[in-house]
Each structure stands twice: as structure tokens, then as C-alpha cells.
Length: 211
Image 1 (tube, rainbow, N blue to C red):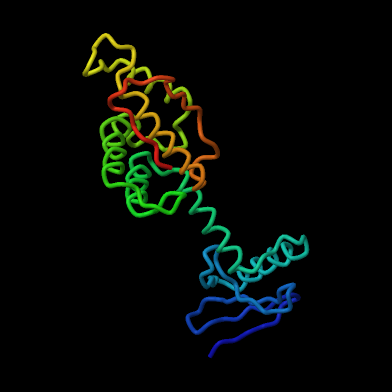
Image 2 (image 1 turned 90 degrees about the vertical axis):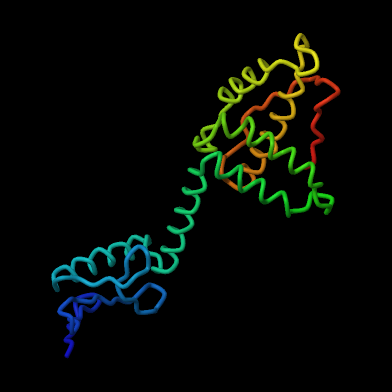
């Protein structure tokens, strides 16, 4: 049989397993059983441990810092989800973004053309993933984008090797900008870093932006 003893505040109870359980009255009038930060049942090796935990919980309530275990666990899960989102790599996010735009409509409600999505994917796979790869999206800053731009600008134009505009830089940076804007909307990054698009492109190879 289990035994229980009322403490100055709360109650400790010895379970059939030999461990101790702690119960206490919350400020909302409900009775709570000790639980972990993940909202799992929490028991103690000894009565002294249970009483120590009760004393700490009583202090939290007295300070106005106590929250119901389920609410606290939900907040911690949300925080963990946000942290995972912030640490997502460019490759992971870019692949998810491509999958997303295949099915999600544009602002006007229309689907993107298959050829448009294929064009975006070619820019992601051919230029952006090789550049950023396993780098967390939140670490892509204006300086990294500037270096990418320099590397893109160094690619000769297939139609005119001496041309200042190669038909590559602007389309690739346009896709990167779209992707980063979505990452900001998703809360993966706090804000979109500066992406400077070239003012002019060769007539061929221009990417039509579908937002």
C-alpha cells in the first residue's frame, strides 16, 4: 500500500514502487502532481527530495513565476521548434521551398508553371546549394551574398564572353531573394539580408519572377 503525509505545504506520497510523489495546490485552485519540464510524471528517490521539490515550487508560486506544467511544456516545445527552424541548413530549407512552390499558388491564386519551378530548381541546385550547402540559413549575410555575386559575375556569358552581363547573376540572385523572403516570413531568419540585383541583364536567360 502507498502511504502519504501532508507537509507544511503540499503532500508527499510513497508509491508502491518505493519512489515518492509530490502533489501541491496551484494558485488557480487546482491540485497538481510533480511533472518534468516535458510534462512527464516526476517522482523522487526519497521523501526529502520530494519535499525539496515542493519547497522550490512553493517559492515559484510565491514569486508569481509558476505556470501550469502543460503550459510550460508547450512553451518549451515552441522554443525548441523555433531553435530547430533557426538552425536549418540552406540545403534543407531550399529543398523544402522548392517542394512548397510546386503546389502552393501565387498571390493571384494561380499555380506556377512547371517550367518556372524547374527554372528555380536549376538555380538552387546549380548555384545556391553548391555555394551555401550545409550553412544555416540564418548565417547567410550580406557579405556571403556579395562573395556569391562576385563568383557569379565571373562566369562568362555563353553568348558574348566579353559582355558585362552573363545572364546568370540576376536570375540566381532573384531566386535567392525569393527564398530568403520566405525564410523571413517563416521566422527562420529575423530579416532579409541585402541582395543587390544587377540593373541590367542580357536579353536571353532572363528569369521571370513569379511571387
